[in-house]
Image (cartoon, rainbow, N blue to C red):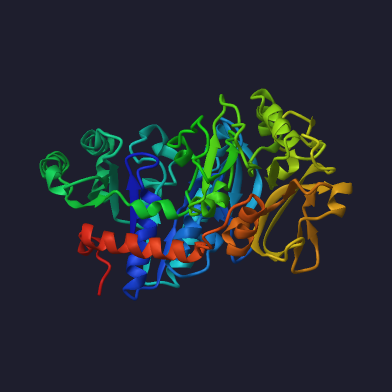
Length: 487
């Protein structure tokens, strides 16, 4: 079996996308490939075939390998709930909430768990492609590291270091990493990759020589900016930092769908299929800006901290914007935590999410949620009760939602259960199910409700096409022989 690790000079340098593209590239060449990330930090998660949860990026990488995702592909997942704390998921199961200092004490045990998962996966494949997290140059974290060099040493992996030229100072990033790494860590790096290059790559030849001269590392290639990445689900909310909410009217003939960007927004890839619709303008509104009045649909998204983000909703005055939208006959949809916010109250008697025992909801649906220690985590299928449009998605939430509003459910699941609620006038609805808009018929039904026509683009086909396109570009951009993957 062959294996290598992709690390980066920082977060958001494109590691996840490169790993996905390489997974598809070598899979297309007949290899049995498995992705692996020892530790991830993201609120975008996916349900696995074996009933757990992992980072969304590893689920995409599994898709690139044409294999179902499993919990071994991302054995440790941290889901931030505050600036200093996170929910800890180990092999797909929620262990509890931990502060950063407490988590550091557990790193040795977690590293051992990650190595065990890696060893299980390597027995079923020809090639393992491992993704690091953050940067190995964060030497203050090196003593307890399990995400980068700590893991690479534990299983003996060659490392390829990625620099992002789009953000600038890429030469300094790579040369600086060489300068601060110790000799043992430097020795694991077998080359570097320049990512997100726009224009003629030969213009950076002198830059490549400077990096090689100062580090001794060979260049593995210069990867152009991968525009097809827009068709793939994002790993985390960093992508939203690059989006600017515009305060203008929606373009003529376009629907405007608005999503408030909560600090702990999660699984916002739920809405990626809407980006493919030519008649839809999708806007994420950051704190500090009102929700636009010229809006056809407001969606309250999932969140890792429902109580805290509901408080933010009130502090931003978004509740006023939502109520004004409703008074004028506008539609509102809540997904998961957003659905819970639409009810009369969110109760947290065991303080699972923080210090608040309860907070009033928006009262737009006659439901109430109580947080519990148990986490619903399952793939589901069903139909929209009013239209019969098919639904395939997943549940991933804590909290039990009850009340009279559930007598008007939104979804009938395949197992006979009802899920969600709809207001008596039909304008307000919500449910716990993620991934609703992936289904072409369901997405078309909602766009029709809003007075437009869907382009009926198959989202899954779009993702597969993007992966193949990225794989083809990487095959032309990188020295594949450097990965020593064998014939």
